[in-house]
Image (cartoon, rainbow, N blue to C red):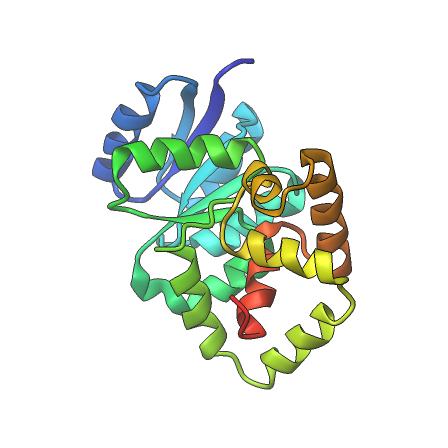
Length: 218
């Protein structure tokens, strides 16, 4: 298996340089492009076809969310990881609904950043309890209407086992960890996760977690 191909997108050149130095030297990761704005990012991704885009949420011109939305419209299978700070709560819900694969703080420790990029590339969205859970709760609390009732309605179609799987996904557990926790096979977990996502109309595991948090179960 070749290296995970990454495009870095941040309007601050110093941050891009630091990320490049960190990630390009990590085993299994190759930085294939970088951009300082959303428009350039779209071009870089089209040219280099990366596995992962590490994307700043706040940039002048085309912001990170608009860029993420356009990237995922082009390629829904692309892994987009958002670089953020905790004051970004007003935009987190939209990012989740767009289908981003996770969130990383800009001061994430190097080893965790490398692990997150590899995890995202492997199709396991980054659901760090210290980051994503707080962001989801902040975003959910700010929503109008009755998101809890809607989330409970969606969850009502799950079987008892599927609900267990959904709760484990919301905890940020990988399929292997869920299999070990529930004493079932990995293949069984994969089947249940797929069914949960289909029933909840979730594009990824982050959106499954969001539904649980909205329902007050996360």
